[in-house]
Image (cartoon, rainbow over all chains, first blue to last red; front, top):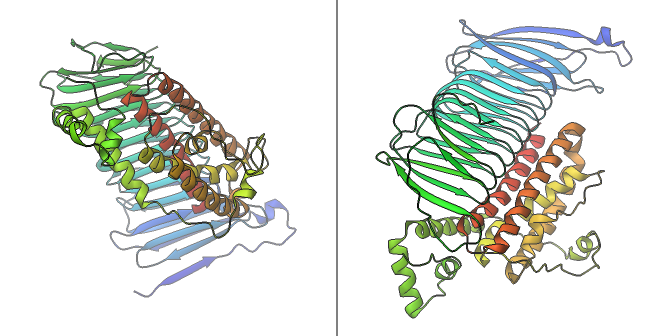
Length: 297
Length: 220
């Protein structure tokens, strides 16, 4: 297919007042089914929503940054390029439902809602919010908070280095990570779940499937796992100076003896079908009945 | 059940056990799922190390590096007498990877800051103890990482704002503290598999954070 390239260059006088350099862009492109949408921005904001048209609409408000639009056979690519120190662009994007998204920014907040396709979203210092996705999902930030809600039919990777991580209503495998932020997972229904923090706390609520693998690891934060109904799992608990509290009747025998420090247990609840690994070097591990992901006080 | 294999796992993996020791180790492995899992973890770690690039330096950079080390005489490799439960293959695997990226990214992140450019904690691991091979490889990788990341610094540092740099530094400090605590715990209980795994994982986390920040800065 013949490649169509539209370059929208914002004509800016070198010394024009800021108000004069502010520009608006509003372009709409017809896209085929399965087209992708990619966006790279620096600062400002990115808001993406779905609509019931086979078109992508790009609206942008810029104080002087150049915005390049590239409409190819695979989809639409948008890139904001700072000019003369001006990098702020506020994007409002409309895409067909199910569009695969790839959005990267430096400090812009990214807000994606109801597109319900695969998504790779990353902002270095901005926050990232994703509501509704299907297929594989990657959401990451370095210093911003990240959240993902209503994710299904794929693998979800979500992480922030110093921000909090929140996940709700996920059906599928999941990996969630932070260093100093808390990680909260509510109604996560998957058979392969891994959650890690270093100093943050972990709160998980969801079923533990008989053939599932669930691993929760923190260094100094508490780990709280809540599950409703019957629990059938082989549970491994490892800690150095932390504690374990369980609502479930368990019989613990030390996995190995004679150590000066550290506690390492394995026990079976129910038929032991699932594999539940709980680790905290110095935090408390809570195994609770219930459906709320709230962490212990 | 007999005592777990602990450090003998490394010897077993390296083919260093023979005779009764080998028979006893294999008998224990046959009966102990935990040791089998630990052995598999060691195998994977070693395998991952083999996939890492280990470029020899194009020139001898050690003198340039050594003079950057605070409070150390130029040309002196700091051998810290810590006690680790890591075996040689573990050190070679985890250390090379961590040093190669963390030291370089530390350069990226600490440019213009007061944080020492030479990261104290995983690089000290790679240079610690009797793991001479690991030390040599680590230093070589460190040389390469410094060169590469200094170039990266010049081209990409401006993409990270000060708040992000601060957040990353704080996160790395948190991981370093976790590493130190795991090291201290291991010094008391060197054969503790959980602590071994926890320390290795903390190093891995640092590597991952640095890799992520570097790649995101590059992508942006």
